[in-house]
Length: 277
Image 1 (cartoon, one colour):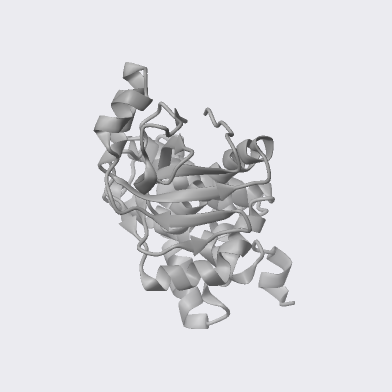
Image 2 (image 1 turned 135 degrees about the vertical axis):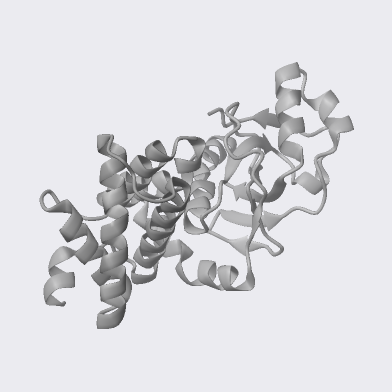
């Protein structure tokens, strides 16, 4: 990944996620909508290398949002922009969509002209061709309420692993591999070393159900079945059921766990789940 710093403001253009309204994600980062396509006639003059121009063409159609990052000077701007890559990864994990950023610019997409400085940050095209997921009003309310919690939880390596697993499992095309990645994220959230199927099913059910017995039982049965598919995938066994559906159900489980962690502002704690606070 190549991130640069010029001046005190920069923009990362996002594929795979769209928004209609500006939202503040932190003191120096905001998520902004875009209202036009990349101007390819201008890009031809800005980007001097054929590969960079080709990347911009491929990305142009599905850019639906941008991150605006500000800082006091160019050095801090480069650092903040580098760290902001976790924001679009986190957004992809929270809203179960395939987000990627391949382009950085010193101007908002709507303001690009021949004086713009543009940089290709990523030559891997994961997510470029995914239809953008547009945030709903409910999503925007969730971000306003809990995004700062999710961002802070990234300091925890277990949560970071879960988020990265959720955001990247689509980069692979084999369902068995996708299941292995997703479940590595789920397992990272629980401090379990024995009786994995039973314990993860129990702890996950308790964490998601908020002590409602009927909901707990449903979650327990669901997670237990999905964990069985995970075990078959990892150990080369015969997977029962539609592999693609099992992948998406497992991804939905990880997504809900990641969001629940942000809503509770904590990772699952086994003792609290079993014995109360």
